[in-house]
View (tube, rainbow, N blue to C red):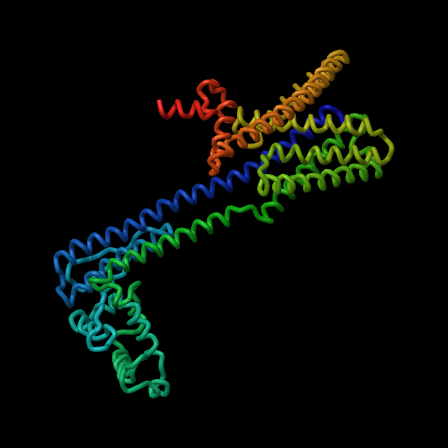
Length: 486
């Protein structure tokens, strides 16, 4: 392969690596952006709940608004606004609930939808009696598109009773026990018989009747915050799963690399033929077959390269430039191995050629790193860096004389000898240190032995080892008596 063709191939290899790296970085950037946005969504959602609790504390409970029997209704309105907005905000949507708070026909607004809330348990009518009273006062409310919102547990019971046939209802108990009674079914049926309110005009609150009582709303709102955090974790996990490398992404990388490699191989093969003096219309059938073979080989190698780089960069801690270098080295050494099997080169040539292939691949990888750092434009920096680095390497390599190469080889031999010498000295030092440490630990063990006699002897040995003056060591009865009695 000519120097120009080799340069084109090497730049193409690093261009593929840079492109895969760029796609990976886009995927990571999208994940980081999604997580950052989710931080804002969680903060906004929790703030909506906190603001609702503060408003309930100050404007309802502290003011005793609604009194003993009506306070829970105002708590329900504010809580619905806070929770409704929070559940939208955690998903990244705009808050659209608004508390009207004017004692008029509308309690809440959800966008342009008017909502009247009824949280009434008296009379066993599941808030339907309160709706009837509101309709009498505002008969156009439903026709104007208004909605009635009732406790979630009331709505579910009404939904169940509304769907029961008379035959099924006849099996209900006459009085309410664990389940609905026949009387309650009759009340629900009677409510919808006059057609003034259709079932579609009712909707469930996010909360049940008992959850908005004075002694329960604090724990209700705390539980909602826990639910929001759980939703937040799930959304973050979804974002992470979307950001993970996929088989489809690997296929795209493989196909693109294959197409560019095949095209490069075809162009280089045609250029080589043209340099022989042949025009395209002069190519023989066999020459076109050879061109097709080289193009197919380039296509196959490109596909393997793209998929390999994608796998290495996503499933191991390998940069794109290094991954390309690994793949290039693998191809090159495999080619040399085939030549060795065919007897075209001997074992020494195989080793030397493999070393050169690895070195050149490393130069390209380093050049790509430098190029992208200097020119932070995807692919362009890698291509320019690889081109410049390869040209510089070729220039330096060709300028080395045999004498200089021999000097380098001698230097390497000296370094290997020095390494072996230092390794031996290092091992001897370690063994000496290990023995010294073992002796020292033995002294410590005897000096602090629970046996007094052993401890006395051990203390003397330890003092001697540490260099204490002999006249200061209590190693005789006379010295002990003199120290403690004088």
